[in-house]
Length: 495
Image 1 (cartoon, rainbow, N blue to C red):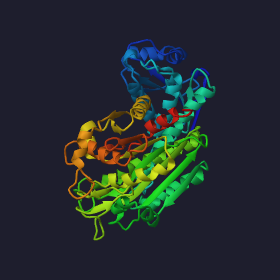
Image 2 (image 1 turned 30 degrees about the horizontal axis):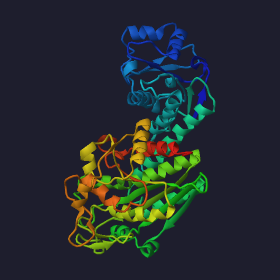
Image 3 (image 1 turned 180 degrees about the horizontal axis):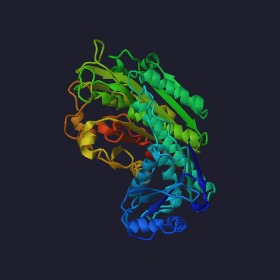
Image 4 (image 1 turned 90 degrees about the vertical axis):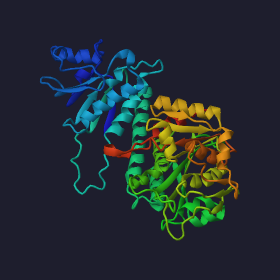
């Protein structure tokens, strides 16, 4: 899709559809007033008659004649003083949702003119968000449909803004690249597990590296991991016919002596629970247990497109967790790469097992920071629902930067404690630790487990179990937390 900026009067641009904003019972934006004047007061009359509402996310498509555009889409943006970044995103998503399956090929979008009530809000922020929402909302996953959906007619969007200089162009490209990264994440997450297994996921990393020469990829097989002592990771794949893979992707856009920011993704391509078998209902959604890995891929694609002056290393621990005669058993004791021993009490607590060895492995990169992300615990869903990602960290500054990035990106996280009192729940009679801490504070004890392998660098853990995918009618990968991660990495450029 072709998305461009224009500083021309929106009413003068030839297109199929003009999109304008109407707040709730307040003064209209300049572009909306100009459109109304060009239409001889038609929009004012429709508002007077109750057809046009400024209610947040309401829409009305109005056919017109004698103009450079054939129709006007009016979007309600709510009360000005109440317009948060979240409500602005809601209005924008409603507009794009109306356009997605419509007949317009070229659309002029004026919503960058509508400000939010945030003192930090800028036109560049809104332009960037428009780019991201366009990519996100126009996404379809039809690869496995025998009857293909009709091709979307919309192929060009002109975003009107106060100018079209480098700052706004960069903002738009950042938004579009972030949206494309989210879409790659969704593609990977939505791919069925009979196709998306560890070897296939490694092939996608190699494909990404071929498409973006700035990314260098290395794949470790099970023999190489065994030699490194990555036994806890390999204990997860032991019951599967699909071999595990460790996927390393490096982007070196910063100075050669700058420490990299490392992302670690949990890549359990299917989680049956292993010997501690999950209930059958809803098990199909366990293909999303590689949501952390998928988000790492999406973030790396975005970084590769934008090519900021920063060093980023991404490491994905990919494995399939299955029951069989060779599977790890409850009661087994495994020696991790760090030398610490782990008593396996529940084979369905496997994410922390692939991550702990990976957190030891990434020390070799001498990282500035390490952020791991994983669909780790149902307990985090119980604590925070599906709105916020759980955040844990051993570094105050890192935690604050991630929280701030989430707020800016509208991809929020909420910090939970890592107090020493919780560590005792991991005590084992037979090993250095056990891999579960019981039902109380399950998300916290899982993070406490990981913290024991991340003592040598600033580290944060993002539990995305509640945010990485949607269930029910809208079932599918959400693309989160790519926006948070991209904002966080870009905020570290030059620091």
